[in-house]
Amino acid sequence: MANESPPRQPGAAGAAAAASPAAPPPAAAPASKPPVPAEALATAKQVEELADKLSACADSIHARVMADIRRHGGGEVPEAEQAVARALLDAEIELRQRANRLYADAAACIVSSLGQSQQKLVQLTIDAAAKIQQITRISDGITLVARLLGLAAAAASGQVMPILAAVGALKLQLDTIALHNPAASASSSAKPAADANTPASDA
Image (cartoon, rainbow, N blue to C red):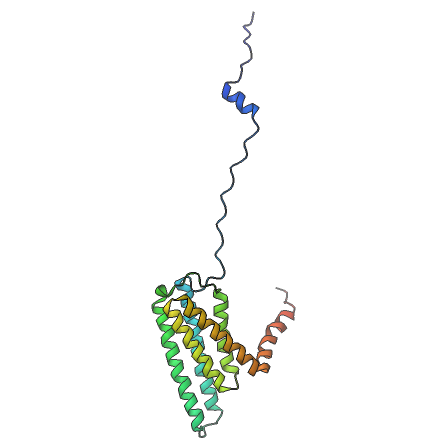
């Protein structure tokens, strides 16, 4: 006769596991927060990017002065215009020097919690380079260049408050130039709109 053994009973641990509901999966670790977009000049690379844009503004100053001189067709340039040209060329040299300092000391110019986005800061300098070519009131241009020099000096300090003040002064001057040169501002803003309305070509 076959030896029939009774069915095996689960152990205490197995019984407890069977009686209790399935344990919920462990909670996923909270995802790390993405970088806050309102942090400009937070890395050496961002400081170098600002230096690039300030150098581009210096290029724009030089191009504007040369264009104003060429308008006289080789004739005599009035003394008042010569004085302005010399002042702007001196400012161009100083702006390049300050941009070079930012390149050299980028790591020391990093700022924490500036409260401004890198994109906004860079866009201000791009707008400034464009406005230098468009302005009709030379006094606006001289003040704009002074604001750029102020921004370069503030960025080199690595201090939040001077940088914020310089950014605010630059934005205010750009707004003033837009009021004095509505036609130029309208044409520069109309081009992106026209590009946006142009249907994309098939690849």
